[in-house]
Image 1 (cartoon, rainbow, N blue to C red):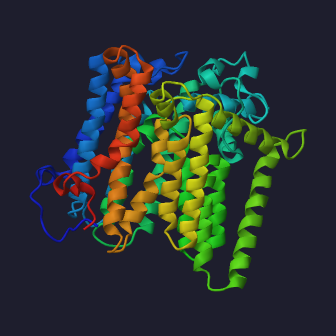
Image 2: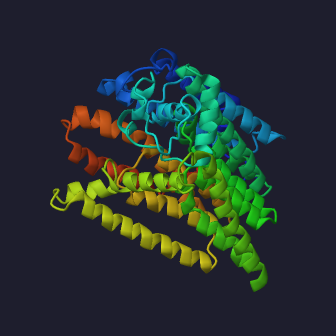
Image 3: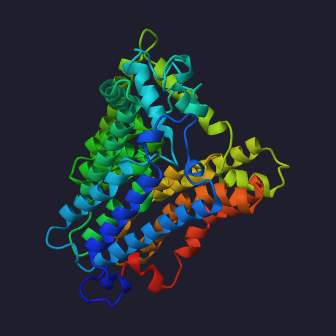
Length: 494
């Protein structure tokens, strides 16, 4: 953990924490000015970073702003690790996180336009009285927002019933105002993000490092760009998972597991983490009887919770129709098409001589084996925090499509693991945390590699862009995390 007992003569010491915060807020304000949401909210098809930065210098300028933000963030962490947050650090962390998020609420979601899908799918229920599990956006050709769903217009929702419920409520409030709808979804994401900050603070052990590790979450550019600017619903999924862990650690393992099940009913990918926390709680129970009771309550409760959650969406069909439609939708997404991913890198590296479908089957099979191995390690006592972080990383490494918001999934578990690690485990946990931070940065920069660098420096060659970009995102963070201590000290667990 960061050692605040001795002063450090570092660059961070020369910059007061308020100055670092103000400069970061100013840069996010510049992004909001560069990518304004208001005048562009209805652009069809949705815009991206190339729309606002169509030239190579523009793309490189955006990349430079992201790198500078990460640098300021690291300096802020160094200041926090020396006690610069004062006697009430959580208040300052939350206030700073809110200040950093506010400009991004008014920035166009340049790297993840799923938020427009949230609006139209919410309107399927609130405006048309239909179910997003059975009716795709394309069925509502008269809706003015439908074209913004883009390539997903012909598909039903990929999210759970406990996401579509708040989506329908928010769109009922926003009505026919697209800007109001987008802002409401962004605000929900920021509230979930700040609530997760409070839970992380509460879970981390008291001590001089607590504030610094909490700040690693709350002021993190990779998270703020995904959650506040892009408004992605991963913030709500992560909140439910962290809430469940918080509940379980307070002596209520079955209740904690059910709260985590809410995360899977919000965004189904959360189900990957559930076995590790189930196993972790099961191992800590003292005898077979209490373990059997825990398993029965947890599993039966999760089934009942799922049934109740899907029940309002069943309509006139079978009670099983909505979950079946969702399952088929997720299978379609997992097995159909391919984009920026290690699987496509292999496909390109092999000269396209092996079909992408075959490569996808192999990578997904490897992921299944990896997940089973992680579960076995959990049964032998490995931390569920590490299991959750690893299974998420394994999933996105084996998926046919990688999207930059996937990089947020492991990070909270890496923070909690490093912040609460024992002396024996501190070095390994710290390295994993550094990998996670570099991974967030490289994921953000991947849009420039695959967009501007590919178009202007690689002659538009997608194969070459993959061969460069995928290792930069999936391999380079593991190497950068090995940098000498002077450079890695910002997240050094001593």
